[in-house]
Amino acid sequence: MTDDLDRRLRVRLERLADAVPMSPEQAEDGGAVVRPRLATRPSLGALTARVGALLVVAVVIVVGGSDRTPTTGAESPPAVVATGAPPSPSPSPSASPTSQTEPSAEQIAASVQFRSFFGLRADEEWIRAVYGDPTANYYNFGVPLLPAEADQVFAKSGTTIGTPDIVAGYGATVPEDWAGLYIDQAAGGRVVALFKANLAEHEQALRALLPVDANFEVRSATWSTQELDTFMTQVEGERDWFPTIGTSFYTVEPGNVRDFAGVRVLFKGPDASAADAIEAHFGSPPWLRAIWYGPEEWTGPRGDLEIYVRDTAGRPVAG
Amino acid sequence: MSPARSLDELTGGSVEVAIEPARDNDQTLAMAAAEHRPWLLRRLALVVGDAAEAEDLTQQALLRAVERWPLPEGYDIARWLAVVGMRLAIDERRRQRRWGFVPIRDTDQSWAMATDPDLWRALDDLDRRTRAALAMTVLDGYTQDEVTEILGVPRGTVASWLARGKARIRVALEDEP
Image (tube, rainbow over all chains, first blue to last red; front, side):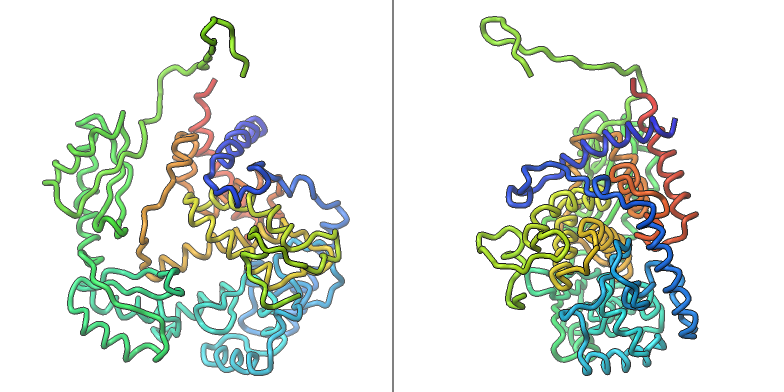
C-alpha cells in the first residue's frame, strides 16, 4: 500500500517538478529532471564509514567540554574539520576549509569577541569549523554562526546586531505605526522599514539604534501590522459564510505587495467569479482582495479523459 | 582559482572561464552548476512553492559552492547542493518569521495549481520540512536515516513528518482510478 502510494506520489511529484517555470538559461539541460541521488547511491561500506566519522565527531565534541555542545546534525561542525578524518563521501554539506574559507587572525578575533559577548562557544577550533560549514550564516551578524547559534542570539534580549533584527525589534515597540519590513535585494540588500505614520520620528529613532553605515530606509505603508491582524481576524470570523455562496474559505494572509496593501482571502469554488461577492460581503473595503484558490476537490466519480485528434482529412493524428 | 570570477560567469553567462578541474571527476564548477541548477531549482520549488524564491535559494546554494570550490575529494556535489539548498529553504522562512517579514510580491504557486491542484493543495497544507523530507525520500530515493542527517533532526521526527505527510497525500490521491 505504501509502495503503491510512493509510486503514485513519485509520478505526480515528477510531473509537478517538471512544471516549475524556469528561463531557458536555467534549463540548460533542456528541462530534464536529473535525479542525482538514485544514480549515486553510496555503497553500504561508504554509509558505514560516514556513520563512523559522525561518531568520532560526537566524541571530540564531548571531550571539548563545551556546555553548548550542539545536539543535532544541523548544529554540528563539519565532520572533516573536527575529526581530521580522511575524505569520504560524507552526507554532511560541510566541507573542510579550503583556502577560501580559512579565516584570518582578525576574523577569528572578531568571532571570539562576538561569541564571548553572546555566550557562545568561542575557541579557535570551533570557530574554524564553523567557517568551513556552508550552513553557517554570515549575513546577519558579520561573523559566521551555525543556525542553532543564530537562534540562541536571536533568543537573547533585544541586544541583536543584525539590522533587520534591530529594525523589527524597534517596530514592535510602536505597534500602532509598525507595518513590517522587507529586504530590497535590488538595492544591495537594503532593509526597508515600513511605518504607517510618523516616518521622520521613526527614522531618527532607528538611526540612533543602527550603525552609521547601516543600509536601511524608511517608507510609508497604508496599514500597520496591528490593523492587518484585525482585518484578518474579521475575515476569518466569517469563514462559515463562504459555503452560503457555494465557496469555501481557504486562508487569509497579509498582502503588502507592490500593487496592493491589505489582506488577501483565498477561497475555493467553481471559478473566480465569487471574488466580487466576497469582497462585497465585507463592504468592499480597500484593504481586502479575494483570490480564487482553485476548485473544490472533486468528490464524485473519476475516470480517464481520452482525446483523439484528427486532421482535416479525418486521419488520426499521432501523439 | 580566480577570486574575481563572478557567479554569472560560472553558471551560464556567455563568458568562457578556465576553471581548475575538480579532482574527482574532471567536472568544472561551471559544468556542475549548469548540470545541477535545474533539478535543484525544481526540488526547492516543491519545498517553498514559489518558483522565484526557489531560484533565489538555488543561487545562494551555488554561491556557497563557489566559495568552497573545489569540494574535498569524494564529496558528491549533487548531495552537497541538496543539503545546503534544503537547509536554506527551511532556515530562511524561520528567519523571515522572526523579522515580521513583509513580502514585496505575491507568492506565485500558479504553476503548481495549474499542474496538479489536488496534490499541491495537499502539499501546501504541510510545512516546508515535511515537503522537503517527502521530496527527498519519494522523489530522490534518500533513506530516512539520510534525511535525518541532511536536515539535522532526530530520526523519529523525520519518520513522524513522513507518516503525517503521506497520510495527507493519501487522502488527496486515494479517489483516483
